[in-house]
Image 1 (spheres, helix red, strand yellow):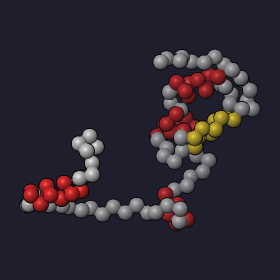
Image 2 (tube, helix red, strand yellow):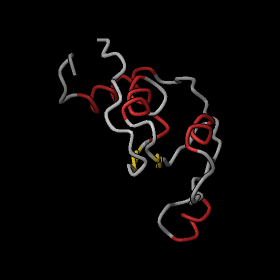
Image 3 (tube, one colour):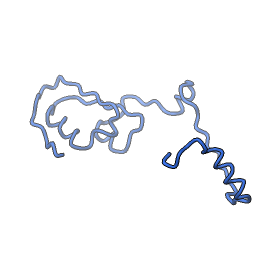
Length: 111
């Protein structure tokens, strides 16, 4: 569906557009429509995962809350990666098949 670009709706400079998930929504027809409809509005974008274009679109950051700050504040757990290796060779196929049947016995073929 092609909705096209809207006409200007309000040229006031007293409009504030606040966008959540700004890294996902402000680079396509939606963004073009907002800009065209309210060309003098002030835009503030919120995102937890900014991409390169986010700062270009919105300007410098008003505030940053880093993962390290969140961990130190106790609102986020630290992500810890522990590399593991595994010997994927199956030594007892009958035992593996029996275990598989036991684990999945309550499911039908479609599940």
